[in-house]
Image (cartoon, rainbow, N blue to C red; front, side, top):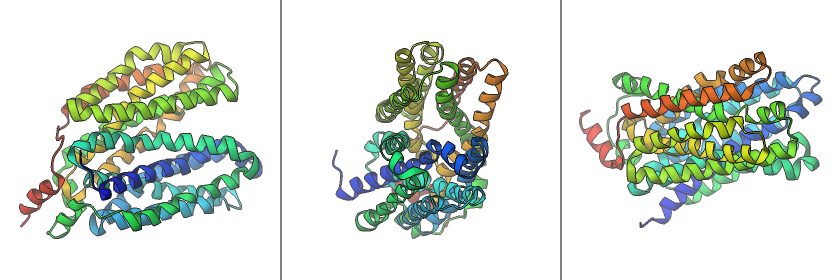
Length: 407
């Protein structure tokens, strides 16, 4: 497969963009206790910052997606990365909790924009046959960012403290210079730019059935990822009483599984189709459930966590390319990110839901996590078969055909 230098640069930029975005997000997760201590409050009050970040992500997907569909993917991505880097730096300078909460809400807007804009730029630029693998690579950026944040915490926290962690988070701003120097605009946007296009609202109205379907699908997907990841460290610490070191290496193991799953099933989707790859990957979760939730030793739980994240992030690895291929051409920078983040917003109840049920049943996190994941895996496997299969469409040609009908 012949790649141009520009196609390689776009892929590198988009992968690093999502990795560093996730890195900036997860730095917060490691220092909740320290922030609470400095500001004289409890962890629950500080954790509200994470909820605000997640809640504001759909706003960012809408704002930055709209800008990217109107003015181009490349300049919007540069502004977006500069915004979340600056807000990360300012978070480290927060004088009190209220200021920090406001800054993390604004960070959520910036974080919500990157995935959709970076995905559109990449999927419209790389060779069609490479989209599946690149999709898995882009999605692997999220666990890559989590891993990176864990390493920075483990190696630097004792020297730089929680504020220093946020200062490290300004480094993604350097990616803007790379994009400015090496990344071109997407060919599909250049095609669309020359033509009269219906607006965002008009396009969404024309495609309202697809939009509602995609939001429901992404709600299930977000329950799949958050339902298997967010409460897992708490499950290991509370139900199994494992120490921090054991929890850390099990967390590292599951993130490696996530990266492997995303790359494998993203590439597999080029051969068997997007829908079938997602269905197969989701169903793998079912036989893995007993090992993942009900094992008693750290080694077996680590193996279960590794296999579960191959399933979860394997299914997720196909999502960037699938949403870009089924998206209306005129709003490709907006649509995938918006439906993803709206699904994320609806699924944000997962953490309190799982914790509440578990605590009401003697801290039985295993059962509630297994029930949630079992149900969601089946829902995804069935629901994805109602989606459109548009593997390998020519996005520049597709854009020409759609816009030709507008005149």
